[in-house]
Amino acid sequence: MKLSSKTEYAILALLELGQRYGKGFVLSRDIASCRDIPESFIERILLTLRNGGVIVSVRGANGGHCLAKDPSKISVREIIEMFEGSLAPIDCVNERISSLSACCSVEASCVLKDLWQKMYDAMLASIVDITIKDLITQERTQKEGAMYNI
Image (cartoon, rainbow, N blue to C red):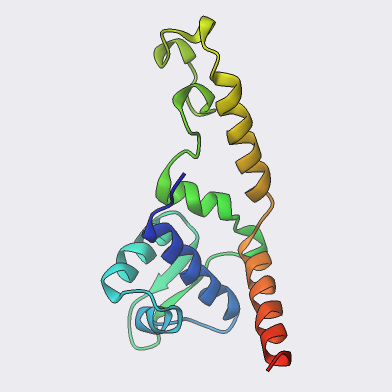
């Protein structure tokens, strides 16, 4: 599965907002500049995040964007699905589709469903408990490690 640039930029924007959590609003251009996100993308990404209830945006002189909730409550899976839709590699393992018969005419004799299900389960297991806070912590640890290696 290949994720779009929008998804990557959204997670980077959330990392920036997460590092500044509780310190007020951050301007779009500052998020874009700090995380090397093209300004042509940032507004659309922030709009999607706002519509998804992940960030709060305020216009005006003291406006900007901030997280709507603690970074430990924002899962990477939630953000990926917000931008990419279901992570299921094929409809027959998509838990959002209630009727398998509607998506597969060979379900009874299909030998691939177990393979797709294992792949989907493994991918979900690798991201299910990862939050923006976890990524912030990992990023700080890597930066500190890089400073000691100089």
